[in-house]
Length: 327
Image (cartoon, rainbow, N blue to C red; front, top):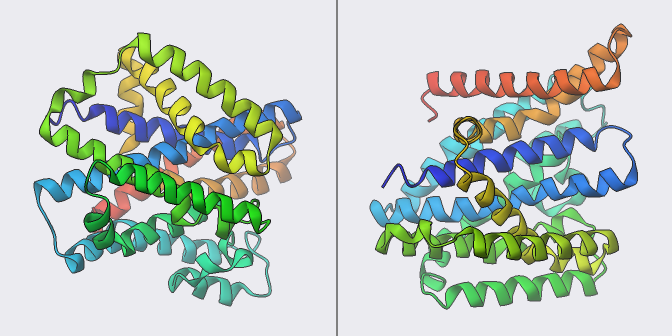
């Protein structure tokens, strides 16, 4: 059973890879077309949330925890590593020069930054995801009660679409605290829970999708995602469904090619996926800041060095956390 779950590790590892790559590319002046195309890598967030719902619910089915036990584990595995990076970031003078730095630090520590857009992206634009996933943790008991049946996925999808509609009508489509509120991603998290339940009942479910299904559906969803991404606005909000499916099926196609080197690399990357997500923007900023001053490296070289170094730092951070017995 554990071996068959390798696909989940692969999905998480590949997802974080494309998310980090997207953030790197969009930090540099690239052509508008490439900028738009690189955004597809951000769809990894959808798969990451799907896998989170899958992993948490499968763990619950195998070994149920009380709500307090659940929060304690999430505190150690998610909140504490996150706050450590926030505090380290605050010590770097050039990384955050805001006059409201103390308020920003407190907003991360006490989690009220998830309700204020000017605080949400402080200490790294990627940190919004932590707010979203913590929101899911806080409502975990309600998710277990309301969405643990097959029809729960449909309810969750309707709620997510309703939320997207409300956000669009309020003109908040481009406001992070609105478009990344947990209701926007509820259907993905609940779908992950449902798939975990199906897997628990029949582990052979992982073999149901073949290339005859994966390839045409992938092409259609990726094409729709591209059109919706270019149009932007409300299209982008409703784009989550084809974006997630297109991205997920792309990864499954790659996985099912059974290229050992690729599959092994991303399964391994999954082990440091959260740490990489937390540190990569900080590492990018520091690497660019110091290497650009040297006037020795070109922009492409700095980008490559930044990417590799961020991976190394993530591995080091994972090792430190393991020594602290965080994991």
